Length: 236
Ligand SMILES: Nc1ncnc2c1ncn2[C@@H]1O[C@H](COP(=O)(O)OP(=O)(O)OP(=O)(O)O)[C@@H](O)[C@H]1O
Ligand SMILES: [Mg+2]
Image (cartoon, rainbow, N blue to C red; front, side, top):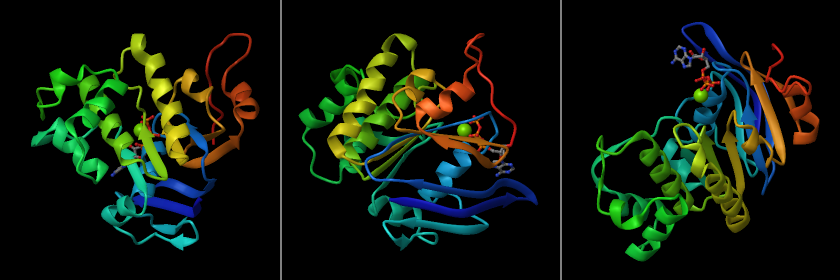
């Protein structure tokens, strides 16, 4: 279980996260949503160790990991797929997936992960993870690398961004399968109703505060206006 205790984060005197308290139980599918600029990506980066909270504690399975580095957290079972994926010049897709898996992965197994995210493996496996890949291709490759890691907590920051809607259903299947296979927790930042609909728990962050936490049946009716179908968020 991951626990965030009273997490505050300030930059240049600006409060970006204000006393965030949250528990992510084992084997949960949690979706974090809320308005642009609300603090979602910042919170994910704090969990992954990319940013350090100004105050508060992060506890993973009873161990205080607040001061752990990104690498220590990655080794401790946390994976993170960025809102804007990073490119790795000089590294091939095959090598990146193998590196992520932490084992001597066969080409066939690496191709299997690419196929799962809807990429024709033979066209991508030997390509470099550089600027020549489109945004959507890069996003899919990043999802494949995170899947290969099979950690107990996987964070995805807006995985749907840049992914065409025609193959979006497949992507949802990928998350459900990953959740089923690794028996770990999945924490997805998303604005997509289709992703919110498969959540065990929905968390809303607005103005740097957690404003709602509950099952999708408890939270979604408050997010989506029933009559108009239009989406709104309560101000923090
Ligand atoms: N290093 C920084 N310096 C100044 N402001 C920052 C910094 N990092 C984040 N912020 C601000 O903190 C707020 C929260 O940013 P964050 O990226 O977490 O939002 P978000 O909820 O992920 O939004 P979106 O839905 O647009 O991705 C924003 O107003 C952002 O401009
Ligand atoms: Mg964001």
